Length: 249
Image 1 (cartoon, rainbow, N blue to C red):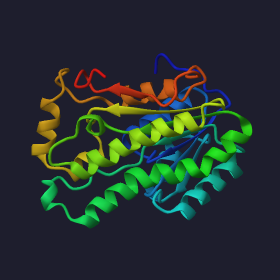
Image 2: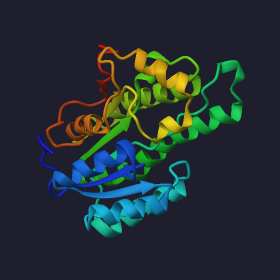
Image 3: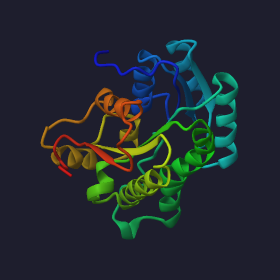
């Protein structure tokens, strides 16, 4: 892996870190010298990923929608590594792919619980420790859909727009500390989330990308790597686009 940033001595918590973008982030952080706690609903997959990646990885079962589960994951990470310097809010769901008037309220609520309340819960859990040590990097994985809105994905688009808004607010709230809060807005990547959506919706997303391909998880991880590093010291509350030219703002 080229162009690694120095994360030696840092401890990161990565939600949804057992696969997809989360795993690519975990691998990049490890290669850059960090220790990583994978917070994932799928404990079996998280354990398998940790076993493959080595001793500097802790696998913790975590339901990001449950504050008690998040607090337990934080405590397990602190017990193992002593601190949390970096939080990557990556866990998410695609939600329903249907016209808004055909979406069930409970499906909207589920999407918001995972994609918005999850990062909210995780931020609440780790920020006091970051303030105490006067250092932290928080990166929220949003989406191009949160900027532009995808048809037949109103719940997902709304949840990612909400994350962008939360990122901007939290960045300002923590600006007096050496804690940065930023979001990344990738175009679609080929991950397990594709299993939750229709081929028609996948084709639509590809058609909107001027690069004419999906972003790779490694490309997203590279951008997250910068936002999670000490070099990202004066950029906060920002939305870092990685949409292959779909959005230029």
